[in-house]
Image 1 (cartoon, one colour):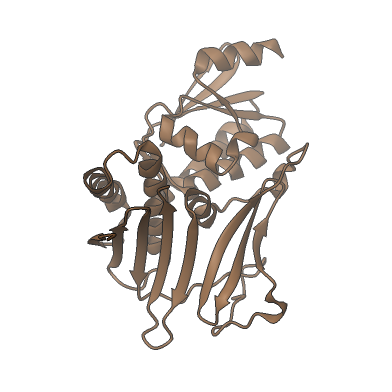
Image 2: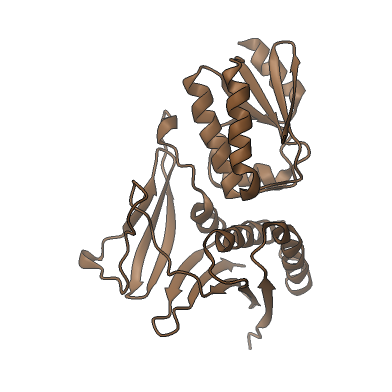
Length: 183
Length: 114
C-alpha cells in the first residue's frame, strides 16, 4: 500500500520569507524522500520559489497555503489561495484573455508565450482547470528581442512532470498542483 | 546599490551584492545595468559569486538588460554561478542566451581571443 506523507505549510506572502521557507521544504524532502537525490531537491526549490513569488505578486490574502505530499513514486506540491482567478494578459497588458468557465473549441491549446527557444502552452482539461506544458525549439539563431522576460510558469513547467491549475467556482479557491515523478 | 563594479583590462565587471536576487531587486538591477551599459563597455561580466538564490523576476531583468546591451553593442556574460543557479539557467535555456563562464579567468581568456 502506498502511504502518503503530507505536510501543510503557511506562507506569509513576504519576499524575505521565501528563502527560509525553501529551507523547510528541503528539510521535508530530505526527511521523507531519502535517497531521491539532488535533482528532486533542485526541482522542488525552483517550483516552490516560483509558486511563492507568484503569490506575492497576485495574492489578495496575507497567507498562501502550500501542501507537500509524498507517495512512493510521486512528490506533489500544491499551492492554495483565495486570490484572483488565474488569467493571462493580452500582449498590450490591458485585457484578461481567459473567461471562466473555459470553453475549448476544437480542443486547441492556449498559447501563453512562444519565442525562438521556448513555448509555453495550456490545455483546457475542464471548464475550471488548465494543464500547462512547455516545448523547446531548436533554432540556429536566437532572436534576442523576441526572447521572453517572464519565466515563472516556464520554470515550474520545466521542473515538473505535471502542472495543473484548478479554480473552484463555488469558493473561488485557486489550486496549483505540481507533480514530480520519482521513477 | 546592488552592483559593485570595477574595470580590469578593459572588461567591466559588475558583482551582484546580493545573497537573494529576486523580485524585490529586479527593477533596481535594470536601472543599474542601464547606467553601466550607457558607459559603452564592449564587454560586461556579471559576477554571481555572492548570489545563492535567484528567481524568475531577476532573470527577466537580466534578459531585459541583455536586450538593452546588445542593441548598444555591449556583450554581457555571467560568471561564478552557483550550481543551482547554473542549473536554473539551463533549465529554461538561458544558457543559449547568455554566455556563461566558470569564472573571471575563463571569461577573460575567451574574450581576449576575440
